[in-house]
Length: 277
Ligand code: URA
Image (tube, rainbow, N blue to C red; front, side):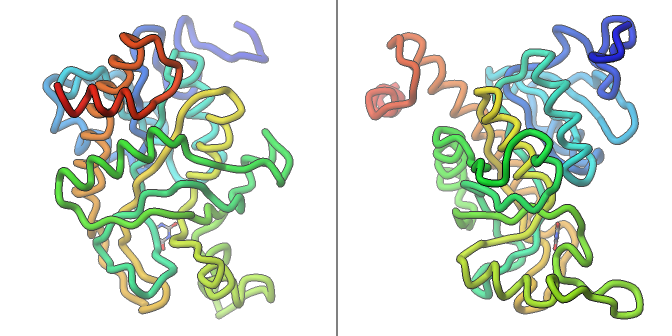
């Protein structure tokens, strides 16, 4: 066993999964309980491993090979999951998260497809300088939008701010109402920059995926609105799950056509052929 790439036998140290256990398309919710909720829509699903905050299932969804792996909360835990998933051959990541909306017009229960993330997560600084963008892959974003349209789910598209903390890090007063000066106006500052939402993992996932030439995107259920001060646990989560699963089916179909046409990138030719089939 090497200290620089810790393994337990043939398994990666944190996920406790081995080669052949992980599909190329991986849904990455934070919450371990969301993994079986995602997998209940699959044609077949097997539990691969349960270790710490990382629950892993693999199966197929309408012909697409798919895994779901929980990342736990926050950038450091998510970075570990993405690292180990890359090692096991994953190349496309879709975060299926919950979020606090920063715009008044976003209703609690809506879903948000995040094209990029403000890097307040901390963990991505281990990978790249602050100027490096945390952007989603355009084909993953398009697959999520297409799936939301097909399912009739109310969605928004734009930037998230991924934070290293849920309370003070998102401008919520801490114990005894402690709130440092830099957090006091954070909600209004980000909202005035047209940032749509707060969550805690997208920036880390998008940054690491880009560093390694992998694809990433994310769909978040707005369980809170920080402007209207509403909070409904689980609102929109089932919609986000359904859209994410369908987005994997769509991406898999596009990827198959891409390889038939010998194209590296998703183009209008791929979309036209897909619509005809
Ligand atoms: N997740 C977050 O990070 N913030 C919220 O307000 C809700 C979910």
